[in-house]
Image 1 (cartoon, rainbow, N blue to C red):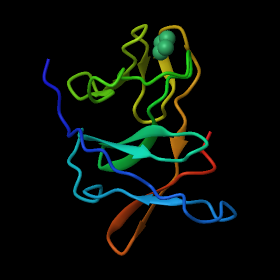
Image 2 (cartoon, rainbow, N blue to C red; image 1 turned 30 degrees about the vertical axis):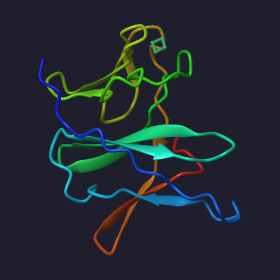
Image 3 (cartoon, rainbow, N blue to C red; image 1 turned 180 degrees about the vertical axis):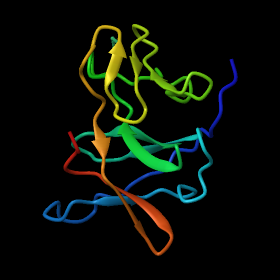
Amino acid sequence: MVWRGRRVVQRASFGYARAVAPKLRIEGGATLGERACLKFRIDDPADPREGFLVRIDGELRAFENRCPHWEVDLDLGLGDPYLADLDRIFCRNHAAVFDPRTGRCESGPPLGRSIRQFPIVVEGGEVYVILDPFEE
Ligand code: FES
């Protein structure tokens, strides 16, 4: 099995008021290739977590790297949670499979539930994920 994508970790700053939803610039997001995955880290002191960006059918999508079953990292910190060869997001804990277009679980314990998605905005040719609130 071939793993595509990069294991780049990026950080967001939370040094300002939360009244405005913080956004995180994803360096390299605009040039992310088809079926590639780019992880990023969200250093929110109240809820540190990771996310990942994938490009599917030419469109970017950003997901939280957290399984809706046990609220643990999908990839267990071992690599990209997106399997390009299968075109599916995969949880290493209990082998759940998710549609990368919707984040919805197709098989496994969280069947029918979805990975949380971040809204994405493109400004000045740069890709940003809006960290709060999540798209459901
Ligand atoms: S923790 Fe992901 S399927 Fe159980």
